[in-house]
Length: 119
Length: 213
Ligand SMILES: Nc1nc2c(ncn2[C@@H]2O[C@H](COP(=O)(O)OP(=O)(O)OP(=O)(O)O)[C@@H](O)[C@H]2O)c(=O)[nH]1
Ligand SMILES: [Mg+2]
Image (cartoon, rainbow over all chains, first blue to last red; front, side):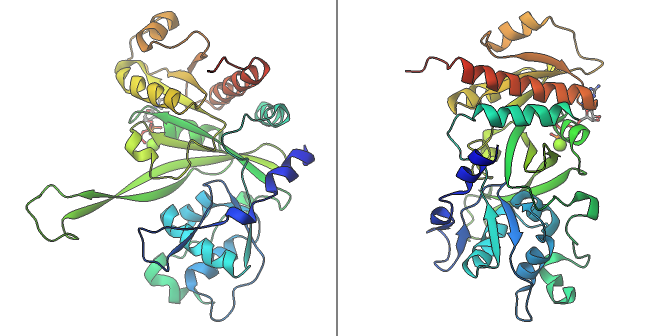
């Protein structure tokens, strides 16, 4: 199981950022999925914006973008703006979900099945 | 560092983040998702809650719509923002992999609010209430368009008319290959079996790739 997962994590940094043209030109949004996992790589500093600091504090362990949105009570689109800033400053790292538009591999489905059977 | 400075944005009760027992181990390296989709009140939140290891959480997105007063020349005031919520839960599958379950309304206009909600999903569970089958028609058509694999779960409401599966399948014009299952979203075992039905179906799709042009 570790092999495919390493593969999913590769090549991610290239597509981490996207800039949305219909917004203010300075508003950068991280290109993340609802289930992209975020892990803090730094502690909040004195000058860290409050919402950035909140993300850093709650992401000591992996946390999905959806969970961050829920705990901050912020729309996902607002969370992606915060994440773009944190990623740019190398304060967080992300663990990408399994790429879309691919048939899931049998090993992955096996793992999902086993996990569910334990419930 | 102090939360008071963030009150304006985060509110007076600062969210602390996940409770201790809701924290994932650092070994978790990837997540997958399944979408539970159905009409209003069909049992989406109930199903998410019955299998989730965390208390279901809510993520939201804002939808901007043109106001009804089209004669209103004030552009900004003429728009209304609606907040649309989506409940979700989480299941740790092993020490490296987690599954997220999202319960989303059946209307397609909500789906676009969350980028890639279906695109990255393993598949979907379409929850059906036999008293309002028509909601399911729409959903099924749209999932087919997007090539999202799905199973259909018939939620058993006590006052709902009982239809044989074959009759429901015919009414929804559902291909024989798509699994249908009776379920009680309130029951953890039943909800888990519904998810297992989806995963087995996904496995069968890999084993025998469907003929696509
Ligand atoms: N009998 C029965 N009742 C159910 C079942 N699933 C849900 N309910 C009940 O139906 C009601 C609505 O369920 P919810 O889970 O809130 O439905 P929902 O799809 O999330 O609803 P919205 O988010 O408002 O669209 C609740 O009172 C549930 O207890 C089921 O399988 N059987
Ligand atoms: Mg609900």
